[in-house]
Image (cartoon, rainbow, N blue to C red; front, side, top):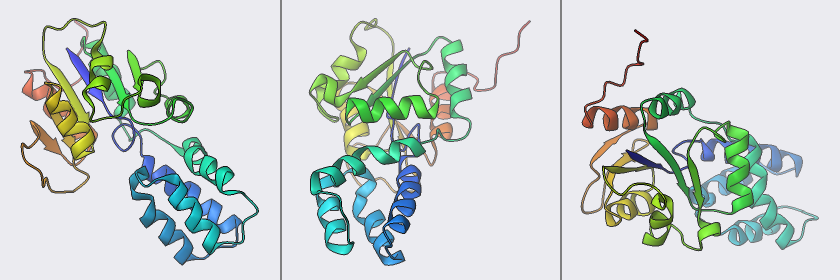
Length: 222
């Protein structure tokens, strides 16, 4: 069975990592709490173009960095702070032990997202990683989902689990996947709701296993 998994804010706490980096950065530049608040609010969970953030920071702070240098910092510096959500590494190991094929499908740059995989401890714990820059397509485009499942048997059920309603859920639905939405406390506001949903990734994965008739409790050797 194939399980496609988003990376940022699904497997790793991307927003928490960005906030940790931003607090350090703003303090080092002599910025204020208002500057930090602006940066975190404008970040848009990473979806705001980095040039917009760079321009805003250059206006607010007395920086020696150029715009291009600041864009690169905004793209990459937070990656060193990323961590997996508690319990997810163990859950992924359990899923693989039970025969699931795990495929990370993420938008972003290869260098950026690969570093997150290494720093978080995810590297080597999944069967395949598909990054939008490498395949030339971003979720929700069907091409990235096609690239994700390429080389694996087409029979059986494919799931897509992620936190972004459009990129992950609608993209997964269009690719023919069952979908699990990590809500982070948000309400679904689009048509065609996900197959299942829960506030956290661990809860979503437990529901996925339950829906496939698999006990989520660890197996015992007999």
